[in-house]
Image (cartoon, rainbow, N blue to C red; front, side, top):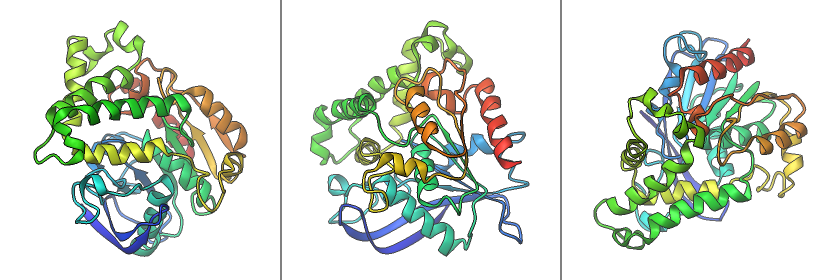
Length: 330
């Protein structure tokens, strides 16, 4: 894992601090520097959690492409509540927006890696949110985007979901208003329990698709999700959730909250890949977004895995996504 430091970065909310971006590269940058792909990470994810997209036989072939996976701010690897010194440690960590994440990533790509063009930007969930932001801010730099199970702006119901899940974490006694001295396992377990009901669809449970990932019961799904999120620091989850709850690619000085203008600014080729049964990033939102983009196609993933259709666990979903990525890279 590599670190790129941006000194005295001023966030959208006016906080000035040094920002560290943790990233990993895969494959080799060619002489023309025209084979670069960027993948921002998702909520609760780290760079290694995206490596399923780079496995042998997948569309993002690291024998052909130079893939940069950047950890989003707040995820515990890039600057986060858990690794930032005082006065911004823990619960005092400032809000970083999609705009902040992408502007920092742009510095990494252009200044540290000296890349002027990106062949593709793609990501899952919050990685998809960042992908939309890349397309809006830098359409001439990015040849194509593929947002997977995400949206350019958080919908009202989506916001209610993530704020309620984080609310459950915050009211757990061992969270101690963010001042805990040891991992607040009750808080993390409560969060994971709530999240498990939303990560997968009703059909996923009805059809017992969890057996495909070697789980036997719905209770096992809950435990699986809890164990996943127990790898994260609780304040880090809050920080990422704050970014999610404020997600809007138009909420910046470039677009001044004109959402349609931000969507129209995405002139690069795009295939938007919502999950057909995603419970919080809904296909209807993608329909609206694609309608405003000039060179975009809507291609819902025909999956009963819910939001997890983009998580890499279903081989059928992976094949569907890879077909789109291959087309964009052709």
